Image (cartoon, rainbow, N blue to C red):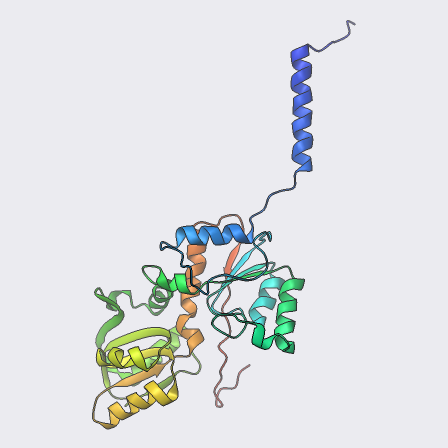
Length: 295
């Protein structure tokens, strides 16, 4: 049999192919990083990124490889533990991780609970991104969009004022109960006559101070908020009722008043981050009623 001697061209191509294969084997897979996720958020949120903002990486590094993402209203220790158990090592949270709006840790550096939470994040190789200002700044507001959708109020919204809603007339008690049922709220508080007719409601998700609370209340029968100072807006509404005005205030609780907005954020993130699983993880409502003890 005549021995086979490859041509110079065949030999060269084979050699190059083997070299390329070795290079591919030697090069580790380049996974999605926390920094890349944040860059995509900045690109897709639809508004310029602010210089002054609380929206930043609170824990972890931009180089951290992302295995999965949690979208949540609040990065509580419970949410972090559940995320780690599911292999989701990047948490995108609307509210702070370390108990202040700016996530300042200097005042609590010696606190044992802060240290436990910080160490848990580090030990499990996690990243936490605070996503507040730009999710609200998006048009339409991401939190408001999710809340309106969860309540089924799309057709009730005023085209000129996304906070204002008009409904067929019903009692305050029935209106509040409908909200509590749709959002599974255990500890909603209501100020006003339960039989008061409600047609117009104005919702301001999250925290609402005395101003703009007063002008908000003037536009509707009932003002809906997440939370407010009881010695300010609550007192004002009580005095308005005592003066003869037919007004009401619904206090949902901060967490439940914005939670569906981060559920919507989960769907939004999936439109431009296809590489890893993304899950919505609701934070637990912190309160319970004495007649309905927490389980």
